[in-house]
Structure formats: structure tokens, C-alpha cells
Image 1 (cartoon, one colour):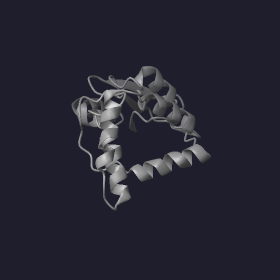
Image 2 (image 1 turned 120 degrees about the horizontal axis):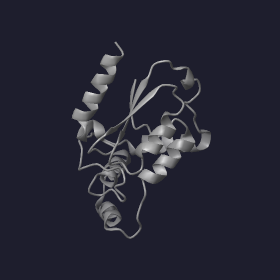
Image 3 (image 1 turned 90 degrees about the vertical axis):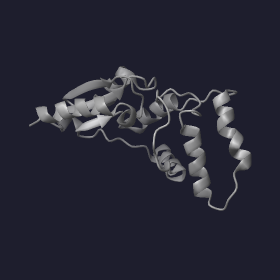
Image 4 (image 1 turned 90 degrees about the horizontal axis):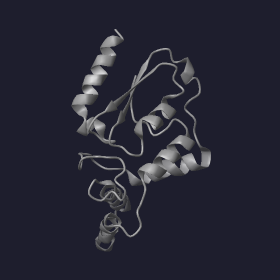
Length: 167
């Protein structure tokens, strides 16, 4: 198994990670840039408008804190703002804990984190990976949270080496 910066396996972990990765600096130019287009939005499909806002707000140029270290914009289709909001609401109400029995997983896992994601870093990778008994933690140099796009060569190389060792 190869994991690339899961925010957390419990709601407490995920909430802590989200609070660091989604910091908003009030009165910042980035926040102004993200909110300014609000006056121009029109249309009947509220989901499309919300998805556009989420995409705009989360893009590299407009990310209020840019703590996740991406080098620029990356390709994606739609963020699914309504679905994301519903997932957060559900987690806040019910919580979750996916760590049950992870200590019984016998195979070493490869756990990747990105060098430039200030909200993650090695200590957080160790915290999230702790339920697994055998973990190989590796940094993806020169990449932020979207390491599968910006650091693909490094991700591929480390993953291939890991998978070939399992044979």
C-alpha cells in the first residue's frame, strides 16, 4: 500500500490538518482576490457556482495561506463543494476512526509526504502513520500537497522501488 499525505485516519487528526492547511489571513490580497468575483456570479445552477468558488478559492494563485506548498495550478475537473461540505458536516456530527485493526496489517506500507507542504511535514506523517506496525516514510522533495502532479517522477520512483521490494 502506498499512501500520499492522508490528512488523518480519525476526525480529530483530519480536523487538525485542515485547520493548518486552510488558514485564512484576514485582510490579505489572496482573500480579497478570492472574494471579489462574488459580485459577478449569476446563474441558476447553484452547485456549479459553488464548485467554481471552491476551485477559485483553492487554486494556487488565490489560496489564502498557500501552506500546502504547490508550485502552481494543477489540472482538475471540479471540486464538488456541496459534497465536500456534506462530508465535513457528517464528520463533525459523527466523527470517524479508521485506525481500528490497522496494527494487524502485516505488510510494510510506503507513506509519502511532500517536502513543501508546511501543514504536513515529517512529524505529522509519523503521527498519522503510527497505527501501522511497519511503515517506510519518505519525503517527496520539491513538491507540495499535489505531489502526484508536481512530484510525479519522485513519487513513481519511490513507489516502484517499494512495490518491487514486496515481490
